[in-house]
Length: 255
Image (cartoon, rainbow, N blue to C red; front, side, top):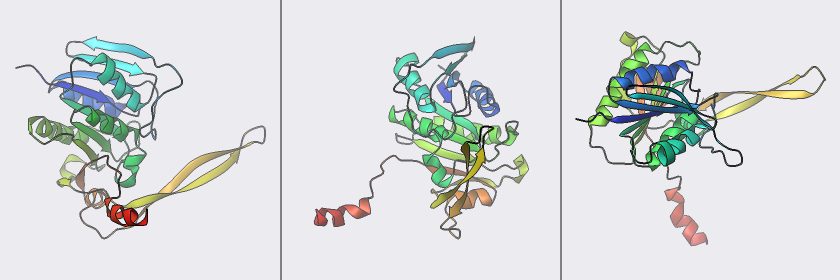
């Protein structure tokens, strides 16, 4: 039987340790094609490149693995795969990650990792965004890779209706400290930003963005934030419809 085709991308760049980790997992399961940004693209969300050319560079081809870098964003990488490189061979699964750092709660809207996963789902490819709650460039992905393989195999073997896009976040714990996997909903909350002002050698101000996440429902036990805080891997099914259906009736009366 023909091996499944797995497409992989990320937002940390083609040389990121998290990407290398999930490529090793995917090669045990199927044929693998990687197109990842040539430079880190965190926070790019669903952005695309429109006013400059894109460059696609082959990095490696060996057996059932092909790796390319792309000069654009994570979503550019997906479009390059589905509309160009793999246009005649739709992937059986798309993986974005493993990201260095969380993409839970409202961070899903800012995430280049999840932007790529969501884009792939538009093409009818089931997709999984994977993130480990550790920003360290040399993070330990051992446990994350093991659980990611379980999730990947279950999705490939399932008959879940499409489109399917999963936002998977993995706590930064050792294998025996992770309590299991919980399917949950996105936590409601927001980021409050702070801009740290400094001066360059010529006396001109420049700014570094930082901030804190505010959880507006800390007592809810069915959210991704609760699951992660209690040692579980969170799995949130993502949809793209941003319509506030609660407002439609009242607005129809107003207008």
